[in-house]
Image (cartoon, rainbow, N blue to C red; front, side, top):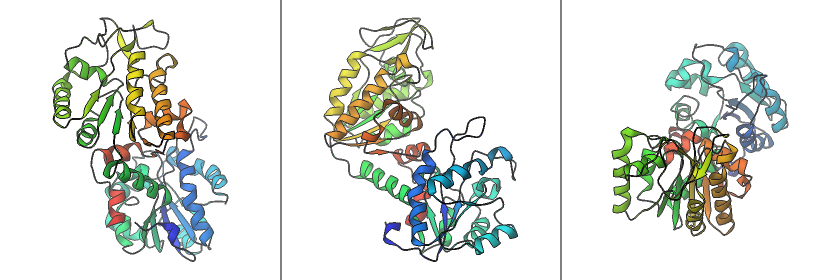
Length: 397
């Protein structure tokens, strides 16, 4: 993999796919600029080289096949300009005469942002003719949008075909790919995967792919109760996928065959309804009484998981242990963040991915202590499932 740090792009027009799909409030203010900030090192590198930068990005999921004001990138421009340290030129059409002329007249060091690439239906279809037209705007193609790397769209994948000798990962993508390869291809043992979240169904392929690789699997969150019910425990009115009980049994059998240790919560913090103000208490063991639901792991489970995490040399965290968004049920999730940070300080490699896990680790205050936090929930999930991501594949071909 050739890094853009090893190349000087002076005098080149560089098409860069960035991920500016950030959350906005009702007044169109950015509430989390992480994705923009993560793109800055690549853009600054190109500016400092003396390249002209043409940025492509999407925002939301427009459906009308044309301009839709609510999905315009206009609210992004001011803040992105401040972060990059340069005024961004904006073009509201991609193939109109004006845009082509603007691209043609870009000076070295200029930065242009094209309007939402998904205003064109051809983008999401991976249309070759559209990709060819787009390719004529630049001399080089760089993909720095890991959050969209699982999409086989024009700007994230197809476009790379028209730059056989001039296609690269941006610095963010390079960081993601190298860390994921380290995690899945060459992990230092013992390797512990912490898999949480609400449903087994959303993590089936992840679990299947991890079982032969890891030494320990810690399961928490809502999916816990499907496993416990499959083992014959009473789970009260906890979340449970009744149609996945047999699957849970199969996964546990597979773990036995591969000598992968499964750790499930041995006690719970339960509530009488789904509310932060609900009545709550700890169970003595894995059984949850009727009329109550599991909302977080219990104190004994926290201690059990702590030992395994501190003994690990590689840790993957994908999914919270409980309803951490409610303060009364956040202790399990935040405790694990603390243990992972401690293990990392002791030399372990820690990887955090998935929207809820990333939000939780930031809320816990331990984000800076992790080895690697992925910026792409869907992309990381598919990578962990063993799938080939188009945004990676077409660059490496």
